[in-house]
Image (cartoon, rainbow, N blue to C red; front, side, top):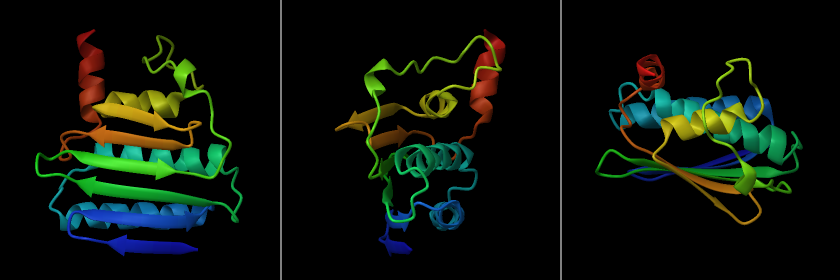
Length: 152
């Protein structure tokens, strides 16, 4: 199940927690950004995919009877807000360590580490199943992470 509502600078999705539906949502997000002339929206796509994958797999446990809500909104200052809410139990987001690990083989919670590296701000609400992420420089890309990493 997939519902989509589109406005001038925003798009809203409500979809069942299935990977095939998630793929369809990501395709629509990419098209939405292209319509808004966001030529290289790599960072937004990475952040959106990580948030939605977490909601489907970890939040709703791939249960097709549970839904994910996602809204993307682009502001005039080239900032984008991504809101994701799932029907899962949530998690202890206050204990989340969002720093890049020293060991690149570290895989635990790497989605939120990547989201944090590509975002201006992450806000959790409730029990951790409602997150809002602000992404600046919509036309930028994931390359900035690697450039910053090389400077260290």
